[in-house]
Image (cartoon, rainbow, N blue to C red):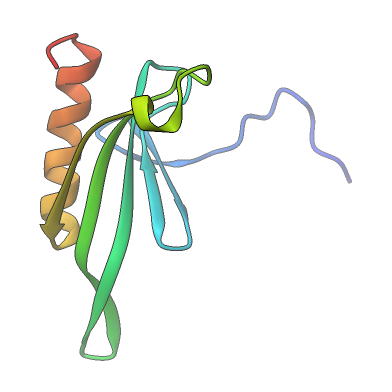
Length: 101
C-alpha cells in the first residue's frame, strides 16, 4: 500500500535539526537553510565489540547549488570522537545561520 504524499519522511534530530546518516557520512541541518554540516567518520575503534567513531572530519558547507564545490566549503576541522564533532558542528551551524561566520 502506497503512503500519502503529505506524509513527511521522519529524520532523527539533534537539538531540533535533522540528522541524517549515509554510511560513514552524517549530515546535520536542513538543506532548505543556507548552511549545513557534513561529518565524515575517518576511523573507528572497537569498544567492547561495538565500533565507535574515533576521528571525524567536520565541514560547514553552503547549500547554494550554484556555488562551486570549493566555494561551498566554509570551514573544516578534524576532531577525535563523535561527541566533540557534534558539539563543534552545532556551534558552527548556529553561528552561520545567525550570520556570524
